[in-house]
Length: 428
Image (cartoon, rainbow, N blue to C red; front, side, top):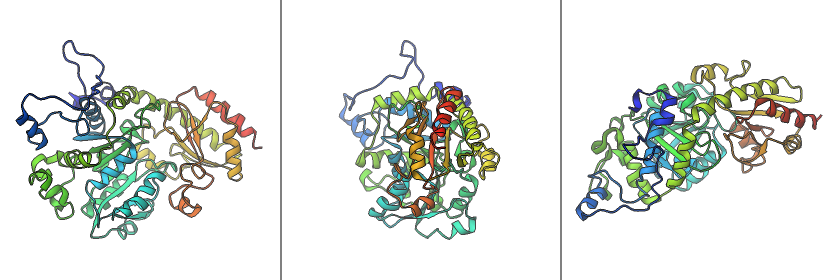
């Protein structure tokens, strides 16, 4: 059923279909464990010989239904929900890369992910090389090593709003026998499906647009099923050689295209946890049902706000791929023809204090660490989310010290513009 539906219908119907006399809304199965009459039947579940539920850390009907919806939206074969977007990015990498491994990533990524890859993974013995996503293929190629396991980027970078050339990154990754992992949080599958452009694995912070109402924290890892792990078996022994903790089972041989996601659940979730609560998945599903409608409003409002800021003399610069004079306009038209997202990066003429004074003068717009909400939100990353980075590190990550991240909501656009206008008037 799901494959025949278009995106708006998948948002509403994918993942769960009520049977005769069942609730129309996805039920919350708020239980840690599931009963069986036969101990041998449960033993088969633990040995991965049979599908079923026995403990929510590994599988839960509510979580699995929402995961199936996100997989359908992205066009993937399988999806695993996590407790946060950061957990999703960690699992996506750690599922195929362990101590002694190496990854290459765009430097224009979320500050938390930058720190995860550049600092925390290093403590686990995984090295990371950051590259400019605008560099030539030849320049990016120099970052690869024999032990490189993945290439990573964000469809639309947070907070710089740069658009990733997915096809270019996919060519480089596949030339080196590794998967391309793309964080598709800002674009969502409504506006971009990275698998259609060559990406192999997609991650999400479902906390953002997929939820849309700031009600739950969550993440997702989606596998396209397209990467041939066995063709590069020496690089990915965790998937292509026997796992002693499951009686010598080899994931890609036993589960085919579902090998990657099965290993992520059976091994990483088993040992590390980081699952979402069923209640959170229920809330996420409510947000997903209106995702296609909200994204249209976010993009429409953001386009008008970006044009307003671009024409204001008090604004030094605006970065939004919907503007024709933006360096990423062509990439935006290629990968995001129906709109990118509601997030705009811009800077004011002045210094950091100018940005702070502007934000403190806003009345309707909220100063919060959150982004991609129904409400319009604003943040100064250099002072908040990226404050652990030096000015040089900020620039390397595509974050100018004066950058203001404006997440345009779904209010009436004239009210948003009125608030921005009056706040700008305070910095004359």
